[in-house]
Image (cartoon, rainbow, N blue to C red; front, side, top):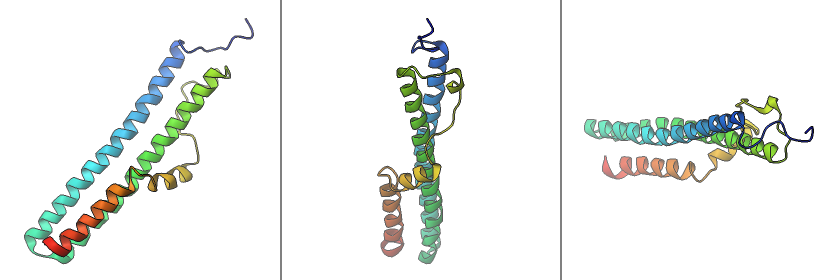
Amino acid sequence: MADEPAFKENSQAVQSHLTILQSVIQRMANNSASSKAWCITLVSAILVIVADKGKPQYAWIAVIPTLLFFVLDAYYLALEKGFRNAYNSFINKLHSEALSAADLFVVNPQGGQFGLFARSILSFSVWPFYATLLGMIYAAKAFVI
């Protein structure tokens, strides 16, 4: 009996811990999607106001929220990756029977946060969206307004 792991896959504590991690990962993914939606809304509103006033030189104001939401979105993606790393590490410990009580209910992202953030900025789920939005701001300023 001493060889048996303290926690198994069907343990209520293990299931609760995994549920907590999954909900945090889902929340980060939702925050990332929300930041994209809010960015489009805010940039569109700025461009409409600029077009209404007939001042195309002010269209560059829309770049500020675009860059801020770009950083925020990359941050959420980095956190999501960190929590997925924590989830995978927990599962690996569970399968290798190295899981201890100290591993339960510790909800921290794993991995170097700066490295995760840098990789998130280069992620295909972030930069094409904001690069396209910046291109559309330029096009709106140059051709439409």
